[in-house]
Structure formats: C-alpha cells, structure tokens
Image (cartoon, rainbow, N blue to C red; front, side, top):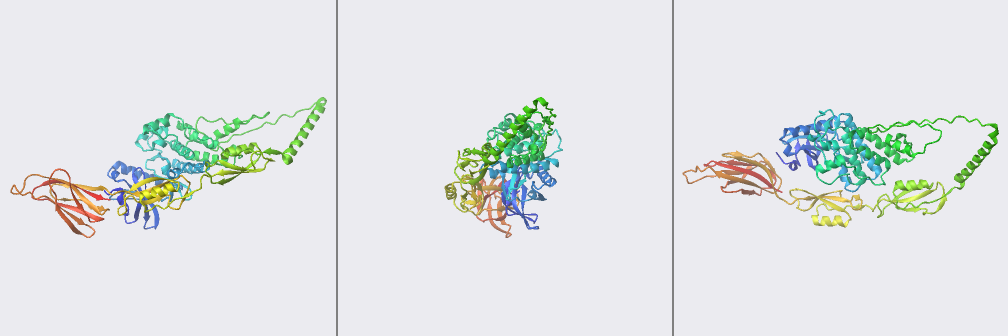
Length: 599
C-alpha cells in the first residue's frame, strides 16, 4: 500500500492524473486531477491508506460516492466516476476552483448581506438533499466550497446518511464535528433534516460573528454546550431578521427549528429582501417575524384584526396573515348637533391644509449626528429625522461598516426628504500579498509581516526542494486582501526517514516493489541465526540484493549482519522504482526488514 502523498503524479486506470493534494475528507484525500479522456480538471478522492484494508471503511467510502451520485443539485459537488486500484477505491468529482468558507472566515466575519446569501445557497442545497432522503450530518465551513463567482457548493458527504436509515440506529455510529453538531447528534440520537438546519445555523452564526457560538473545551464539553447553553447574543448591528432566524435554527429541540434546508432557505430569502428594502411588505417574512412586527404596532380603533396563531413547531417561511378591517358603521348626525360637526370638520380641513403646506413645501428638519453608527442605525436615525441617507464607502482605520463622516454636518437645517451623504468605513486599504514562493521561511515570514499581514504555516514533504523554503502561498502573490489577513505558507519539510514497506522471512523472500521519492533510502533490518552452522564454525548469513525496476538491473548486494538491535544499509540511488530480494544462507535465519525513504 502506497502512502497517500505518494499518489501524487500517479495515473489511475490510465485516465486520471493526480497533481497534488488539495484537501482531506473523513476517509480520503482529495487530489487535483486531470481527466485525460475528456481533457478537463477534476477532483479525485482516494481512500486513505489505513482505511483501504478495512471493509467497513471501504463500504462507507463507496456510500459517500453513491450519495453524491443520488443527490442532483447545482449546489452540491457533482460526481463523475468511481473506480478501484490496487491502492483502494477512488471517485472522481467536480473540481471547485475557489476556496472553502473555512478559508474565507480566516480573514474575518462576513457582512450580514453576504452571510445571508451564502447561508441561503447552503440551505437550498441541503434542502435538495433532504428532499431526496439524504442528511449530510457534517455541515461546517470546511465542507462549504465557494467558487470564483461566490457560488456555494456543498461537499464531503463522507458521514452522510439516508433519511430512511433505521430510526433506532444511533448517530454515534457516524462522524461529525463537535463545534457544529446538533444537540441530538451530540446525544447520539436519530438525525433528521432539522439536524442539518442546526449545523447550518451554527455556520451562519460564525459568518456573522467571526466564531462559532461554542468553541472551547473537549468534544464532550462542546456537546454539553449544544445541549444546555444558549449561544452568546449576536452583535446589535446584525439585522433583527437574521438574529431571529439564527435563534430559530439553533433551537435545542428539532421540532422548534425550520423543518429542513428548503424552509430555512426561504426564511433567509425573506430576511434578505427585508434588509434590502426595510419598507417592503412583511407578508413575505417568516410568520415569527410578522408576529413581532404586528405586536409592535398600536391597535387601530374600530378595526378587527384576524391573526394566524403561531404554531408550537418551527415556522415555515412564507406564512402570511390575513388582516380584515371592519368599516365603521354609518353615523347619523342629528340636526341640533349639525353646527358642532360642521365646525369640527372645518377645523380638520384647516389643519390638513396647514400640514400639507408644512410638509409639502416648507417642512424643515435638523440633520442628526450619524458618525460612529452602523448602517441599520444610520437608516433608523435618518428616518426619524425625515432625511434620506445615501451611503459612500471609503477605506479608513475605523471598523468596517461604521459611519466616519457625513454631509451636511449634524445640526444643519434642511428640507425634509433631503439627502445626507454618509461616508462608511470599508476598513483599511487592501494589501498586496508579497511573493514568497521559493524564499527561505525566515525571509518569507518577514515579508508577510512587513506587509501588515499574518501568516500560518503548513509543512509538506517535497523531495528535491530546499528544506524550510516556501513551496506555495494562499492567497497567491499580488492578490489584494484586507490588512491583517492571514496568508497560508506551504513550507518544504526538513528531510527525515519515512517507512514505506516491511517484509520478513526465514529462508528466501522478497519485498513488493516500492517507489523512492528522495535521493537516499535505506534498509533497516534485524536478523537472528538458528545456530545450525556449517561444520559448526562457518555461518553464512542471508544476502540482500537491490534491483532497479526501471532499468531491470541489480546494483547492490550485501550480507545481513547478525547481532542485537536494528542494522541499516543505505542506498544513494536517487528516486525510482526498486525492489529488495533476500537469499537465505547455509544457516536458516529469521529476519525482518523495513524500507525507509529519506525526504
């Protein structure tokens, strides 16, 4: 069995070229690949080496491929092919060029409109899976992929399950991520589409706040938090429709949440509409939000309001209420009071004319102070003063989304309905990522820090490359990113001995072929004679010989030494495909050998 990293450069079934690891799932590594037959880029997921000999793991790996093939939706990664190699099963899927939501969140939280947009697409994709009987079971930012156009693709169905799975089957049999687990998943109970809704709610919470509601402690401690604790409140600048929506999605009881992804997507769509147009009809909002708005309105006299009562379970998006108003009965004015009513009517007409003149032609107002406020507060305060806020963005050191200036100044007297230009901070100006590829790590760290950025290190073996040098960076060089963002530097690991394969015997025997990536490799072996030496004096030891399978020639031969501990024989043959054969001596000896690569 070849280690997963050694599949880089391999061609599976003569068709799929593997060109480097781009991620890992629950049971496999994901490679960037190329389909030779169709000449297109693909993602190839290969089962991890330590699962390849486990029947249950192979079955779950195949189940993931079947689930992806079963769920047909543009928001879910599409599967193209499934196959087997001597190294285990693999499947070929759509390659999403872009980044994961996890990578995006390393640069900080998202604005409410963007968070709602991504969450809506995520929930719509989950809703499609739910409609086809599949529960994802591991919804988290790392499994939410964002292509270059910002579209969402949901991947890694490695621990997903069919909705019709035996209801008594415990969710403890399935994986998951403690920070995003629903309470019933943490308890090991049956999972439903509402379980995915909870996880999607945690993802939305993290997009809005920059971190999940519960993040510290062990898996058990996190599970207790999901079971018993209320999440910390979101910031006040998060629009009320989104805060209400997150609260419903994170309800402890599945029946109090949106019933599936499609319902939550509809609620998000309504919330987004309300944020874009605060004056829009509330008939498109979820029922819970309608109730809140109507309860805040004073009751009109002589009117009958028919309201739909809120159900005990989670509301469905799009629920509306019927409002029927009863016309006041006709009033008969007695002759003796006609003069009083005429005088009252004349006063009303005069007041209406005065109000029309004041509002329509001569109404004045005072521009309120708006600096330091977030957009929703700016809109509210401007509306109270009867002026229209017009927003303009500008880079500054102030927090993103905060008003930093306004024209006219506060206290200025203007006509009602006038425009007030509000300058909103878009944060510090973007920074160009310095090019550090090929540079020593120390110089790369200095360059990134000097640009006002943070860095994270990812170490990988890279035979033939200089140790402690930068192999790649993400985001790539010259990309504009917000100041203070994190750049991931992939660094060449220092060479070390890495075991490849082990074999043993008593007389003759040989190893399976193995591939060497580094310039050096060695045979680490132990040996013990059985003490039946020829003439009781000469003990001829077993002999090992190395073959270069690329040239079909032997290039080294040596005797295996006896003695305590492990012995080593080093080869400086360079990369290639090799095999070691062992020939027994006159005295039977038990030996064991391990091939180790140095890179």
